[in-house]
Image 1 (cartoon, one colour):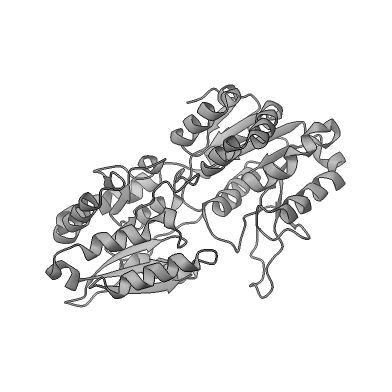
Image 2 (tube, rainbow, N blue to C red):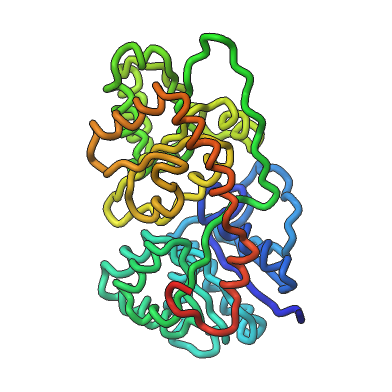
Length: 383
């Protein structure tokens, strides 16, 4: 195929972690693999960061862009859009998260600043935020009118988008999340006789991620079960120090061994997955913040871990209930405790759910999602 220029704009990118950063890195890499000339606009590299890894696309770090959705970062992106408008106008421009969308909203009234092909990706929470305020709602409607396509990672997010912004219905396409390129599960960790079972949670420490609910459910287990387990939390709370303190206080009185591991390197995280027995991430809806999908669930399944999660948002599209994990209604703590107890006491169930994980986690590919994202004709919902 002939190469065509594609620009991916994001306020979340390596070394920042999370689903949006992973989505941008992987979808851009897959687009490059399909033959497109890809350039990614990303935040500045923080001081003291490790050297830039090799990327399969051109990477442009924007001056002044520090990785937030605030006015300063919107201005940095808008300034770059204006400065390079002649280059962008005939190209395909993909806005992979809400930061760049906010930056383009004020510029969209000027045709010279709009690309000929505009692709928007929605992850869930921003749909509710954009719809809540009347001004943002009008700006989002207009942005969707100018867009060629609007993509989501799950059917749940697609329905949420079309419900709040009906104009998207004729432009939406599913671009499912997948495992990272080159992903390889670590071999199971060696364990000695008498080692405790490990329940692992991976995610930023935030009320929406539900770590406190998992901890409380574990603390409600019978004493004999609590004595035989450890709860490991991977992630930090740079913007939620009060929540982290709440977790640490709860951990001190939970009657179980709790380890706060902080942010881990890729190798350290793989080792944590390999040593764990159960993966638990019990996300909940929190204000306008919802769980649109959760790539970390796929990663846990790829490591052959049975998953415990709340049945909210798009989680059911990342965890197959009764096949790769157990889904529990949110805000039903007794049911969550029961689900954890089932897995802790039934090695056969843990093994069956874990063994189904790798095939489930590998069913989607970023190459296919990139092809759908960059197709020339708008796709109907569900295609």
